[in-house]
Image (cartoon, rainbow, N blue to C red; front, top):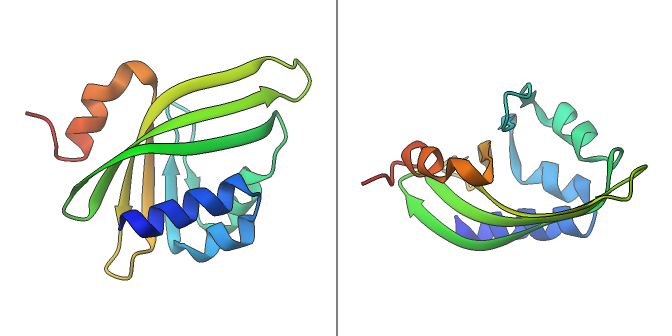
Length: 126
């Protein structure tokens, strides 16, 4: 599981979005934080990954916690606003759900202040 997610992050960071979509389930869903609408399906994910508002995006996994088919990943996000030049540098959490073949079925993003919710979504709350 962790190896599959490392490969997915590496492909994203090098801008190889075709490799990313090969690592996700056809019915993949990205549940974005902050009440934003979800990104559903491979085609929508592929389109979403194209840089538009944010340039030089990178998502570096910091650590992984596995429980069943879920993996909580603390991620370091960096980037720059395409028109504003404002730098983005924050640590967030994502809960990834993988299928039996190691394909990502869902990624649920959480804002920095939502770590307790991320732990609960991963089945890791105490």
